[in-house]
Image 1: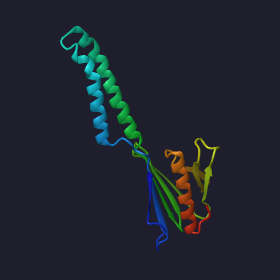
Image 2: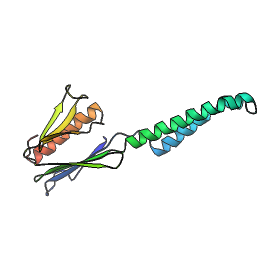
Image 3: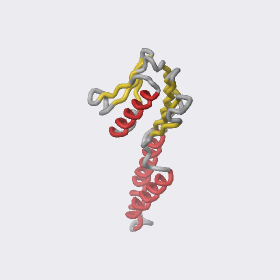
Length: 166
């Protein structure tokens, strides 16, 4: 699961949930994929080394490899999202850190907070929102369908344990 629950309703009656996108390509995998792509792309060049054909093919293969590198780096940077939800009897705080490093904060009284999952009506299946303080914020929009469903049930359970109606 790309989320963890810290301090599950202890004596302090607080819980923290950290949510992040699934990251299947680790830095080592990034290097291995780029290296193997470079090796496979360069195979056709071995037959034409030292000819004019080599210099005709080389720029296109170099641009292709550079494009793959930029696309993978962009994908890796776009997954640097972190949502942190702190639940307590006094307040619910959601802090979202975007890939750019910008942080957005939402604070609400647990009494007014309402957790809702849109099965089909949202932009994606099992779309989770938390409503309160005059706003509705989304949770885990980058998660998969089953992961959002599991997150919803875990959040509902935590809110019930805190005696907060979901």
